Image (tube, rainbow, N blue to C red):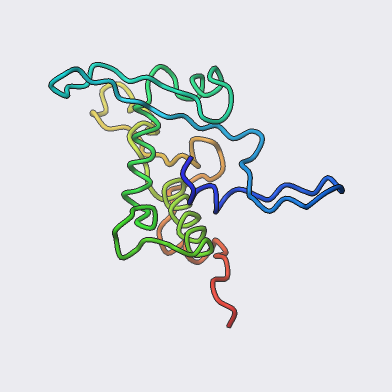
Length: 165
């Protein structure tokens, strides 16, 4: 797990009462993280990927991932694409945790309420054409009954306060 993610989302454990209180942040008990290690042959071609559990049990992590890391990689790619604050060496990179959290909240809300990936579309009735009815992840889980507009998203969801003014 990257130090920036651990810095933003980890917490300092409570003191046990004796000795010096802890000062270093620790990941949550139920956190899961994996590392995909690429295996290459002599010319540098990929021959396979070995998955190693970093946090959590290997069985839990592999159950979450399935047989491949492709879905997790796709999610991370999409998140980096729409949330520039995760990408290093850009003008949008966040150094302050509060700014990063606000961007992450906005990106999560946008991807769950506004965007409708093809995998969530309801199949079209037989003989009505190739396209299905678009749905967002929030619609698929029953949290909302329509695809939100950006205006509706920005006027409905409370954003965290970013400055002291």
